Image (cartoon, rainbow over all chains, first blue to last red; front, top):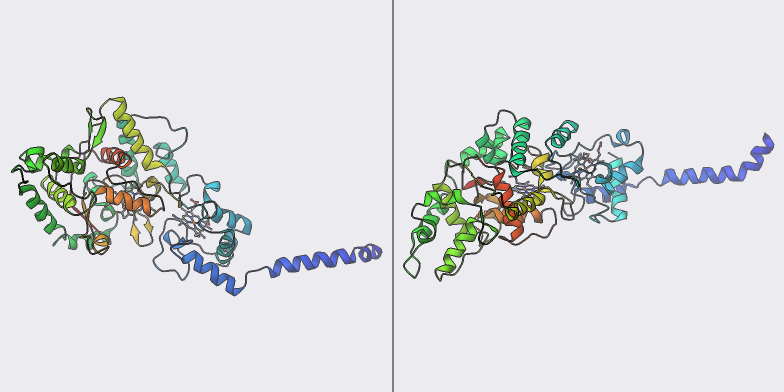
Length: 119
Length: 284
């Protein structure tokens, strides 16, 4: 057993490092602020047209309020997919396919996802 | 939401690729029933009041606007336009008949001879041209003033669009219907998304009206238009509004009085058959 651990040592360290990297890939405050800006901007995400978001003025009520997102989307990739192209999930969705229709760039979708995930 | 979708599906109101062609009469029955079930208690004619039928506080604001309606001056201007003779001595009555209250209810209609949908605006400009006058602009100004007068004179009469059993007319109707249900523009939104799926909901601060009753009060005075530009007095035609609703989804708008918008008007107005004309309307 000890032999095995010893042999796995370097691999395990590498693995731990990887996990550490993933964790530290959490969005910085500046990124969150950038994501929020894109989400609120009428010519970008314009999410407030349809969603209540903390801190946004004159929200619409077409979609559900965006709160407690981590509990609704434990899997961040699914959240990104909803923002990228809501019609892939619900073909009748009124929500614009922000990524698929190039309303936002890949990077912008990432930033918005991080921000929404933080709500 | 699920309940709404089921209702939409059962009403056949969600456009699908395999949508079977139903008769205009069947469409109309489903369309009407859908809104009646969704908004029980609202009187049929009241749907012609758009957002004000759906929200009590908006209604109060609107009712106080209606005490001194900002469109009144334009009805007067329209009346003057109606009365003023052309250079050849004739007037609009030579094209539309003497009684201005009998004009609005005839539009839009299918014209068999030219195989197309004819609108009030189209005939106004045709009348001008036929009499050697310069036609009006299509979306605002004099055309909307005359429309406001003719609409006001016709208040209370029922919308009564006839879709003749003529394959070409049915094709035009189908094109208009398809237009209403098709997603378009960078934002990928259909008229139906906003006005069938989500009437009564708010996009930002604006309350979405029902597709039912959306054409009864045109031309309309819109506060937003009155602030738009120096040459915009607030009055606008239905096709001006169509252009606006296309632009806001980042789609290229069609030209006012294009075939696409005339066919849309044909379908869209037919869906409000039986509702009272209440033009001109006020909207925020």
